[in-house]
Amino acid sequence: EAGVTQFPSHSVIEKGQTVTLRCDPISGHDNLYWYRRVMGKEIKFLLHFVKESKQDESGMPNNRFLAERTGGTYSTLKVQPAELEDSGVYFCASSPLQGLETQYFGPGTRLLVL
Amino acid sequence: SQKIEQNSEALNIQEGKTATLTCNYTNYSPAYLQWYRQDPGRGPVFLLLIRENEKEKRKERLKVTFDTTLKQSLFHITASQPADSATYLCARLRRALTFGSGTRLQVQP
Image (cartoon, rainbow over all chains, first blue to last red; front, side, top):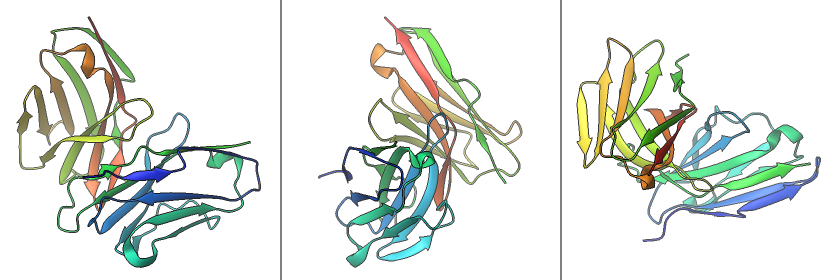
């Protein structure tokens, strides 16, 4: 069974540009989460989808971040315009709808904003 | 708001010894605490979950305890091996995960 995949693995962009991160969860997993780790800090929650619906987006830092999950499969996280403080590692995780206990994480996307 | 704290940034031990990592939480007791392992360049991997009403949980060489009086969870790796070297994360589960900052374990051969 394929795990959670994320694309790209790395992204280097300039301040003011737009970047879109993609996450493909494990097939059949209705829960999809986005997390972020900025330099020197702990991993922090951004938002949670159940199928295509946003269940909780309380961790989204500001309106420059937009997450979508059309069709309830893969998800995208767009940052527009990117700022220096957006640099970090963005993780996606998924879990089955009935099994809220264990989340399966992707390898992360390393974003560097210059 | 509740915080999850892992006060030790790093822990170095000799192969064969038991590694003990500490996770403290503030305010109310979380219903679930989880431990994850993270290797460089990879995402966290789930290891163990312990519920508030469980005192101890074991899985092979791993053991987790939950002490609601001390507001603390301990994570033990017995007979440690160099392959156990990684960062270990404690997390509270309540809808989404709230992580501690992690403890980097180095097992010396």
